[in-house]
Length: 87
Figure (spheres, rainbow, N blue to C red):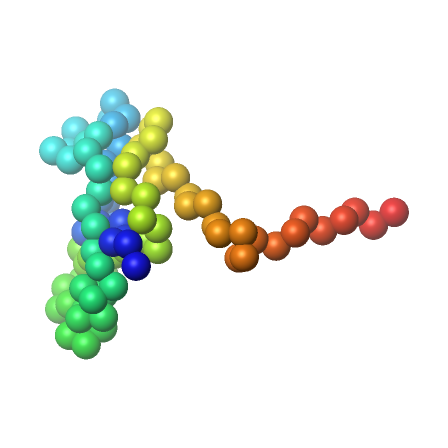
């Protein structure tokens, strides 16, 4: 499994928007491995949820445009065919 996108706390954004003056603005997100996540399950963080580490189940770490993390393209086997409209 590829490393997944991760950050820390509810305000962790790497958006390069003009309102974001954080040091990491415009930089790619860091990553976390499956082993790191399993280790956190075994030994949970002792920190308020607002500041805790989070992850997005995507290996896309870059930012795009206003800083929104782009959703990953699902493999064909996980995509459902569009429903046909009822006549």
